[in-house]
Structure formats: C-alpha cells, structure tokens
Image (tube, rainbow, N blue to C red; front, side, top):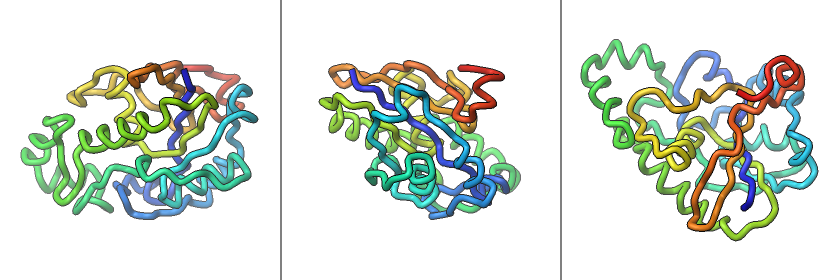
Length: 205
C-alpha cells in the first residue's frame, strides 16, 4: 500500500488577511517562506519520496523550498474554485448574504460558491488521481490546499461535510494516508508536525 503524505502550502498574505484564495495564484509571503524553510519531513519520507504539487505558485514554492527540487505538477491537487467569492473573507460573506450563505454551506458536499466548484467536484477529481497512482510503490509527498485535504478526509472517513470535520487539520503539519486496492484510502496519521520544535513539544494530534 503506497504512502501518500499530504501537506498544505505555507502562508500567504491572503492567508494572514483571512481571504479565500481558491484559484488565485497568490505566492507565499515572506513569513510563509521563512516558516517553510524550517519545515522537515519525517525521516522515512525525507529521502525516499517523490514530490507532487498543485499548479498554484504557493504550493510549488513550498515543495521547492522543502525538497530542493522541482516537483511534479499535478492539476488534480489544485484548490477548490471559489468563483465570485475569491478574495472575500468569510465574515464579509456571512454579513452580506446572511441566510443565503448559511443555507448554501449546509448543503455539505453540494455547497457551491457562485461560478465556483462544489466540494463533491474536488472529491471526484481526487478520486481519479488516486486511481492513477494506485499501482505506485514509492511513497509520495503532495503539496496541496485545504480544500483538497478536506476532500481526502471525505474519502477516508466517509464525511459528508455537514458540520465540523472529523479531524481538525492544523497548520504546518503532514497528513499520511495509505492507498489500498480499490483504491481505498485510509488515514495513517494526521497532524504530524513539520516544525521540529512543535514536534518535540506536541507530537501527533
């Protein structure tokens, strides 16, 4: 069963402002680059994994800083398309749209921003990607986005995206999955710290 180790890109200025980035090609901030430069993989992945990344610059930069090489670009790993809401903050949307936003969000996998993508669509493209890598033997590290990590939780834990996620995804962490024939995705470990100081202090959550 191949190991798929997934992590979210480092921080951007839009992250700091709480803005929905979606497909906007926002680069890492100076603070984000400094943080990523200090991230390290678990020893079993550090020298024996192939690197994949979303096409968006913030993911590619993260992979390059961590690995020292150019990752393989995988279109399926791109962030969910937030359509007309890209660049907005969640509190702004809730204040402006009220019950309309709440009702849309309550649809779970079928939530859709205007002109954007549903979580169900993200899950479908990740399923196709998993089909394509199911025969792999070498582990891989995939630098991606929060929307894709949430889609992986849907597949591994049968979550319908209504209510809180079954696992709280923490920043600067790695999430390990195993892919069995089917393909069937299973969680190996979530929230493995990438910062060595955090790893000593808190371990896996």
